[in-house]
Every structure is written in structure tokens, then in C-alpha cells.
Length: 129
Image (cartoon, rainbow, N blue to C red; front, side, top):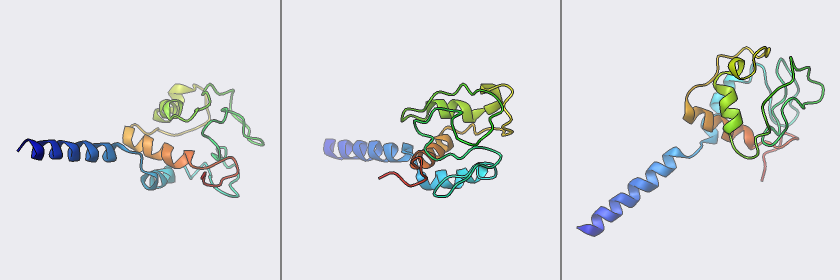
């Protein structure tokens, strides 16, 4: 009986961990909200917003050829989604005066999935290996 409980607990723990993992495919769906203004991937170009290739670790406000509304205050991501998550929840609150008109994404799992999708692209728009 004890073995059954231990096995059940291990399965629940494994399932919960898998459910909490970032989902790149869900992130790609969420990115559709961003794709109106931002492009990502090979051959991406600036639109209303800058290209998001290489966003993971890139210093904000540094995309060549993009005219930013003001100096940004978002630090490079350094492999985490924390600065991105803080920003994407409410861009106008994070950077007052930004020209980015976006209500934000408040849902934590969606933010994690979106970050998983975005961070997979290197500076040239290729998926990192």
C-alpha cells in the first residue's frame, strides 16, 4: 500500500512539473497578439515595433534602424523571463511614454509560454540549437 502511495505521489509530482513547463507551441499562438507590430524569425524586419530576434540577452533599445519612442529601461533578459514578464504585463506602466500601445498579458502561464517561444530565436532569427 505504501508503494502505491509513493508511486502515485511521484506521478502527481511529475505531472505537475510537466504542466508548469513552458510550452513553445502555445507561445507561438500567443505571439499572434504581438505579430501585428513585431516580427521574429529569418528575414524579419522592423514594423511599428522592433524585430524580436535575439531578444533573450539583448540590451533593450538596441535594434538597428528602429526609432524608439524614448530610452528604454528594460534590462537584458539574461536567460530569464523576469524583465520581459514585468514589461509585457503592462508596457505603458513599465515605461511611461512608450509608443507601444498594448494592453498587456496578465496570465503568468501565457507569459512563460510566450517567452519560451521568443527566446528560442537567435539574433539572425534562427532557432537556437
